[in-house]
View 1 (cartoon, rainbow, N blue to C red):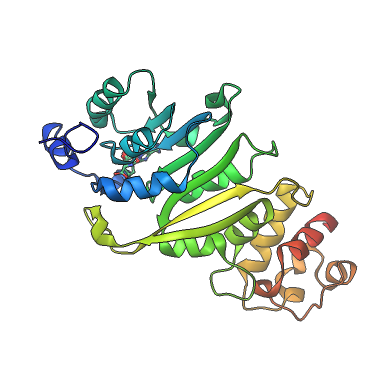
View 2: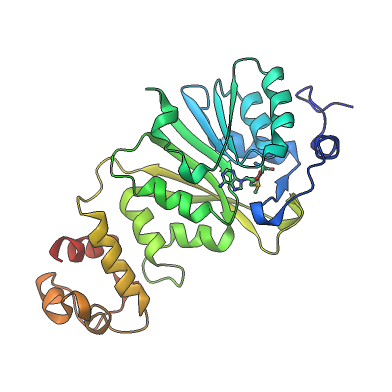
Amino acid sequence: MTAADGLPPLREVLAAHGLDPKKALGQNFLLDLNLTGRIARQAAPLDPGVVVEVGPGPGGLTRALLSEGAQHVVAIEKDRRCLPALEAIAQHYPGRLSVIEGDALTIDLASLANGQQLQVVANLPYNVGTQLLLDWITTPLWPPVWSALTLMFQKEVAQRIVAAPDSDHYGRLGVLAGWRTEAHILFEVSPQAFTPPPKVTSAIVQLRPRPAPIQVPLEALEKVTAAAFGQRRKMLRQSLKSLGGEALLARAEIDPQRRAETLSVEEFCRLASLI
Ligand code: SAM
């Protein structure tokens, strides 16, 4: 039996290539092509430029991206056991899928763009997902090479990415994402959608670059957020003591009795520009 795209069902692909999921590689596969199709459609339009997928695994999302119209998918996969399954997809869609065997953490997105528009769509391995996102949103070059990131995370991480001030999830990740991007949760995905099911619910987040984020040195912003959220229950005059404490807060016109989670992204940028 074949799936709607003319390729074998993903369960057969797993069995044929002996792809028993490895926890160390964050392998929770999506085998439902309706769901991967839904994710791919959220990233539309897929046809101009390059779509980068990190961790294609057996290729469920890769197939959806191609059947939904992506003309060129570049898929980066660390587990070489997945390569034969991906090769079968590449043959089914001639000239439209390039597979890079490697660690996505070491690959610069700019090297994949080839002067074209680029977006990333991925069901990220949970163990490196946050680091990849941080690398992409803190790139020195802005606007970045990517026009959108459509990414699956554990729901709790997704909530931290899109968090606004005065919420429990607001922290360093929310400030950095809010500084440079507009980020939204598109929909949640239950554990049962994955093989094997993870312990927690997941969510798809979409981030688009802000054309003109406040200009501030990244290092300074990282320092301020790390200090402020490192002691998030303390007043800022205490948590920011090593960076100038009350004097710094006075220059930034911020009440020293406030706590980190009440500061807007703009206020964090103001502090960062003063240290
Ligand atoms: N996209 C597939 C799906 O939705 O079924 C698989 C997603 S699975 C959550 C994560 C995938 O990322 C696995 O195939 C894993 O081997 C791969 N992976 C893990 N670490 C990686 C890394 N550092 N670079 C590239 N791929 C990685």
